[in-house]
Length: 239
Image (cartoon, rainbow, N blue to C red; front, side, top):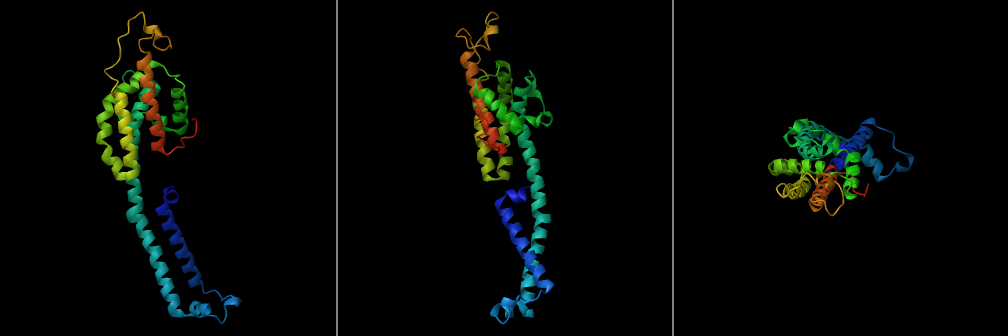
């Protein structure tokens, strides 16, 4: 829940709960504890003017927080959630083309991509596969093609990331850079003859795509790592 995860929101909630607790204590008119009888504290705790001031102040804090929730926090949280859906879908488009290894993956509308590729388990699993170079060439190629076709979309989506926070904007800029580096390989694929095609997924020195595939693997690995950062997952897992 965002109220508990965000430091500012958490502090506001704690302040409001404290004010509500004090308000309940003041309005309940509990008896003064024996150790406070005939002390300056007992004078303030029993003085009606002081109690009205404290009660009014606490009530104002609670009321202000309720108005804040309904007028600012809830609408803003809904808008930010919708913004995250757009940005997450755009990022998932590249990973979905890689995951499902589809020739026309780059033509899939972002509203129809499979966003399960942004789950922590999927990202960490494929981060490990990419690190160990256990991914075939075609999924890497389709991810690269989608990155090329979506690069401008990533750039144009930067204002959406800025609307979330400066931290999100910085992370999105890094993601744009990784998408660009992956997309730059689009026109660099070496020619492969029919006799050599069976070698594209081997480590043989006769493989004409050995270095090219290695570059694609590395660039997609960088993007997956940034997707993990974007989603807020721990980077220690599957490291």
